[in-house]
Length: 371
Image (cartoon, rainbow, N blue to C red):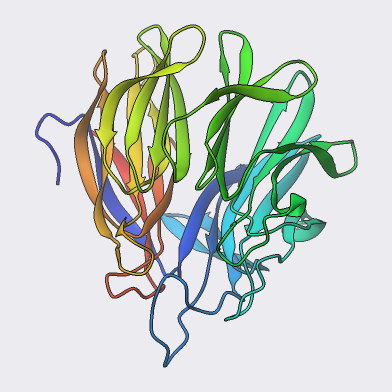
């Protein structure tokens, strides 16, 4: 559905035959466009469907753009795939993958998460990271140093709540990533590093422990602000109308737009109720202020009785807030990411759960239309 006053719309161009897709990561190497899709599980024939079921010994799929769409390029063994984070470091190309679990029940909640490197035209294992219920990687730099943050843990849900399950930041030492700092956590989900008034902030989302904003003090990250609400899932930062803004989603609670007041982010605008899972920011065209925010909605209800067929939303910056201008169907939506091929903008959207609670659900590629 499109609002008549909308300045943006989506036109579906392709469906990818994914299963429990949890992340879409577009990236380009030597001018070639790729897309990595992390998958959590596949359905097991003859068993009851459900979010906690399935066989998690699955592959992450890497697609390559060919002419007008994506074709399969490579499969990587990433059991219980939750995330893929591409980054370039010292002229080398890496893909960090996060594995939540392996097996088909009872599950191993501590499979290693593998960082792959692109070598001779293919991805090869570079480094294994031992963790517990890994959810998301986030690569960023501070003062010439390079960090890779891992959100992990699932306290009270079949995973240990010990030190090894704490969300952690790794630092590049020139040869590999080594542990740098842990962050107080219980069921880590997400990160976002961004700059505000010359300071590097790191937002951390946790499902059980308080989500928080950390600030770089020159040697480490320290807590700047504890955010309200549990079931934290995702953040989006943008600068518009002379101010810094942060969107924060709580899956079981609410999604809010927060405004920087010089010391911390304060609530400014309520955007939606339960369901918010992930964001993508679409910057405005050159010379314009603001942009568009894509909010991907996951489920309503509980893990035991989820309702996955929802409407996800695109908001437009209106000068003093965000206004919904377009909606699109998602089914257990988990992620969205924008990319451009030949000057044409596209949006990849991950779907993870069908209306019948099966994992086999197409993810979709849209062309972004400016109207």
